[in-house]
Length: 456
Ligand code: NAD
Image (cartoon, rainbow, N blue to C red; front, side, top):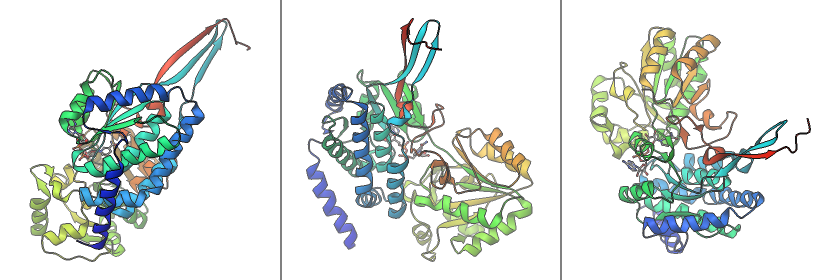
């Protein structure tokens, strides 16, 4: 074991010992009851209290960025530490807080009506293994800003780092004046525990961040639910694009956290006219390893796919680990494994979440548009386009109907890295909230004052 691994193990052990009483319970019923009691106390606090408390979550995200990122990579074997650290900083800086809860007012002859955003109560939030810590921080900031308590159901394969994050958040918010157990979880997350949470009468709202199965489960629950599901984002390049920039942007977006983000470029559709030059620029960057022979591509298919599903062993692993597995050593600088494939290729059609970048040549923009819509599979998640033709950009955005549409930048511009707008790690395509924030975790209520305060 390397020294760094040993250090992480030691810190994990210490932190685990400290976590007793920090929102972690043996049973789901207990976790929900404790959260429900805490939320009733929490709503008595002021908005400034909420601001201070969510501020403490932001601080905890930054303060523990390094150790939690190391723990996440160590436990899940997915992603890379520097990019996970970046995500911790992003979540702290760009997740909206109480300022997101805008009230609306209507005034007229009959007086004043206020439309306010009130808490749901207890939210049951299910989080993914691909982004275990940052989803917890992001959901906690938004959900607490809106006045809720949260019971989390993290992915069992990210159990230790998720419990640790929850304990750290609880510790931080208690120090900032929140009641104990405002955020809770069970000590052994499991599908059974999640199912108890989903059907528990004291859980008022459900938020699922994960693949299609869990989104379907929460949407069938009979409760208010937000589903943030899978994506398969195409990056389209047309003949008008700045090809040198497109080549680099695509590699940067595709390789971020080893391609784990649901928004990351999963395949390229490039018009024939500029395809050779795009490939040339990617090769010239020294960041892409091109697999040029069909046999090696086939070996990668056999390694990386189990039927149509990604082989979990390689999800979020680096290009080096993947190529090494088939006996090919590549330079440490390489970020993505690229290859040209037909459109029907399984690497194009399936969400791999690996730094593997299939490139498909298309006839022209119309062909690219049609194929991009097909390969996105109606997820309404993310698409990227490199073009200087405003008509092409508009036409694809209209046809593909994705929640995020990034123009001339890496995909992560869509969540606020180098692009305008707030961040979130729960992007709700299926249920339509889009890039979720505090207002999506609140109920819209009408408060009517008759015959008063209309001073028009
Ligand atoms: P996953 O679907 O395997 O697990 C996600 C969560 O759902 C976990 O907590 C898991 O325990 C739970 N879960 C899974 N099946 C369930 C079921 N039948 N009943 C109850 N709970 C269930 O996904 P993952 O591997 O952890 O994450 C990767 C997937 O999530 C990818 O498809 C990715 O695109 C998607 N994702 C989407 C977003 C978004 O914002 N839209 C963000 C991150 C990840």
